[in-house]
Amino acid sequence: MQATGRYDGRLMSGEMSMRARALFRSPLAALLLVLAVLSSGCASTGKQHSALERAQYAWSGAVRWNDFQTAWQLVDPEYRAAHPASELDFARYEQVQVTSYRDNGAQAGPETATREVQIGVVNRHTMAERTVRYTERWRWDATAGTWWITDGLPDFWAGE
Image (cartoon, rainbow, N blue to C red):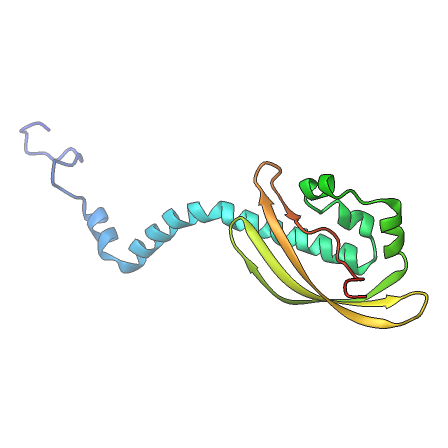
């Protein structure tokens, strides 16, 4: 800055512009600044949550419509490799008809999620209906950018 007595618009050390001072005095502006900084860290969490909702919607739709081949594709690849499904396994699912699928509550973290569901099932041969409680366990796969069911297909025959 020259000693001409004219202000050239630059700040001198320790000096703050009136706009900057007004920004820091306003609680609303300070809150918006904090939210902007914090929301940048939540972007990936929001994307993961949306991906979980999409995966759970696809899973529940496949199970509701007895499309267990499609549901099997949403099972964790590590689980599928350790427990391969045979044609006989899928033939067992053809013996039942899912009549209802009700979400009874869910919990989600950044890497894992659980959802309690109640599934109504009718045996196609005996026409006997029953209700099965099932806990979906999900894990986030950052490499694939998707959520996987970690426990395989629902076991409608447990306890029989």
